[in-house]
Length: 285
Image 1 (cartoon, rainbow, N blue to C red):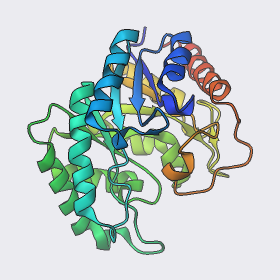
Image 2: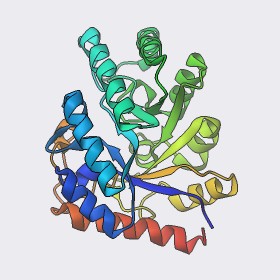
Image 3: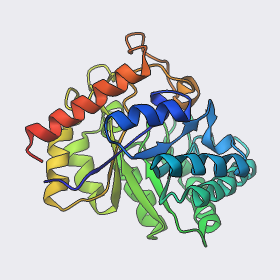
Image 4: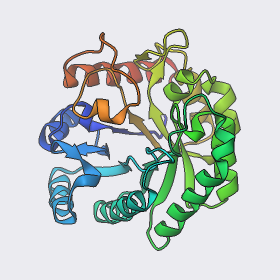
């Protein structure tokens, strides 16, 4: 039997923590990748507010798998000093929530330009982020995301190998690779496997880029999970369905919301959970 632990971007269910936990309870999911809570991005909360969130999570028996931060989702022409301050605040939030991971990115690239010409600045910024995290018991997870430097497996690997620290690992998102024209499995997965410690469950179609429930897109999520099980992976599978409009979606994505998304967070999340369970059961994992 697999040793996967399910988590979720619960702000896709509802902006409100109590509703998030109520729905997750129905599926016996006890972890949250916290990105948005109580109608605001987590990183915009004060530390006192975060302490109250932690208290409520503890009371309900929930834990945080990762802080789903927006760190690294700015352009290279934007104020990095202010962004670094936000990261320092995020580190304190992660500490209060006892989160083992912080999800991060490698900066929006100028349109129609070669990302490699911006490599020195990307690396320099990440080195500053890593330095800021020293002394905190947290691992920084770089997520492959369309339109950032690390949108291809090769550039993700370039960053991870250049930093060369156990403080930085990879979160693997199959749908994001599909939307960049990259084959998630086996190509990207094989290249990045030794760095991958966290998985996002999100699928998509090569033909249109549309996000789909797990197993219904081109991400070969079933094959990836089977390989992970064979390798003894015991980490998180974090559901990030993107199947319904939810508070904050437009601010979090660098593209328009498609019109055919489901309009009810709980219904969309239920669809996502059922699809993942179907993949797991079909594979006998």
